[in-house]
Amino acid sequence: MQQFAYERPSTLGDAMALLVAGGDAARPLSGGTDLIIRLRDRTIQADVVVDVKRVPELAPGIRRVGDRLVIGANTVMTDIAADETIRSRFTALAEAAIVVGSVQIRNRASLAGNICNASPAADTAPALLVFGAVVVVAGPEGVRRIPIDAWFVRSGVTTIGPGELVTAIELPLADGPVASTHVRRTRRRGHDLASVTLAVAVPKEGPVTLSYGSVGPRPWVVTDSSGILGDPASTVTARAVALDRLFSSASPSPTSMRASPEYRLAMLRVLGMRALETAHRRLGEAAA
Ligand SMILES: Cc1cc2nc3c(=O)[nH]c(=O)nc-3n(C[C@H](O)[C@H](O)[C@H](O)COP(=O)(O)OP(=O)(O)OC[C@H]3O[C@@H](n4cnc5c(N)ncnc54)[C@H](O)[C@@H]3O)c2cc1C
Image (cartoon, rainbow, N blue to C red; front, side):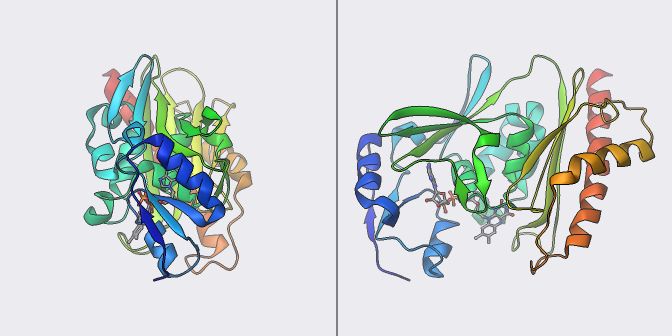
C-alpha cells in the first residue's frame, strides 16, 4: 500500500479546503470499497485521503423533501435496499443495491461512491438513470445540481469539478404509478462486476425508459417513443425490434476479460425482454 496522509474533517468547508489544497493528489473516501483497492493496486495515486463520513451535509439518510426523495451521499447499499419508499416507488434502485457485492460490501458501499467511481458496470447507475436522478454537489463555487445523464462521461470520469463533493442524490417522485426493475448478468455474484446491467421503468401513462451499462464506456439511458414497449399486449417480435433500436449505443469492449461483445449484446436483449415482462406484471398487479 502506498503512503498517504489520512484526514477526517468534520465540516464541509474543511473537507473542500483539503481537496482544493491537495489537487489531483487528494481523494475523498466514503466506504473505501473502491478507493482502497485502487490505492493498493496503484491505479490511483493519492498523497491525501479525505474521509468524508463525519461531514454532516453528506450524512446517510433517506428523506422526502417536497416532490423529491433525497438520499444522503454516504447512505450505504444495505439501507437503500431496505428503505420502504425506495422499494415501492423506485424498485429498480432497491434491486440494484441488493446485488452489489456481498453483505459486508453493501454495509460499507455508499451510493455516492458508486456513481463517483463511475464504472460502466456500476449497478445503481441504470436505476438512477431511468428515474432521472439529480446529483447534488457542493464545491468552492457553491452548490450544483447535475442531471445524472450529464454526470457520467466515461469509465472513471464524471463531470464533478475540483474540490467538489457529492452531498446527495435526489429522485423525483412521479405523480402516477411506475413499475420498475433492475436485472444483470455476472460471472460470480459477490466477487465480480456485471457483464450487463439494465433497468427499466414503465409508467402507467407515458413512455418507457430503459438504461443499460457494462456494454460501453458509460451507462446509457433511452426512451421508447414508439409506444411498443409500454403496451402490455405488444408481441415479442415487436418488442425485440424496438429494443434493438434502443440498444444502438451499446459498444462492448472486444478485449474485456468478462464477456465477449457477442455475449453481452445477446444478453442485453434477453435482459431487456425479461425486465419489460417483470415491469408490466408489476404494473398490472398494482392496478388490480
Ligand atoms: C468485492 C467487491 C464487490 C463489488 N461488487 C460490486 C457490484 O456488484 N456492483 C457494483 O456496482 N459495485 C461493486 N463494487 C464496487 C463498490 O463496492 C461500489 O462502487 C461502492 O458503491 C463504492 O462506494 P464506497 O463508499 O465504498 O466508495 P469509495 O471507495 O469510498 O469511493 C469511490 C470513489 O468515489 C469517490 N467518492 C466517494 N464519496 C464521494 C463524494 N461524496 N463525493 C465525491 N467523490 C466521492 C472516491 O474518491 C472514489 O474515487 C464491489 C467492490 C468490491 C470490493
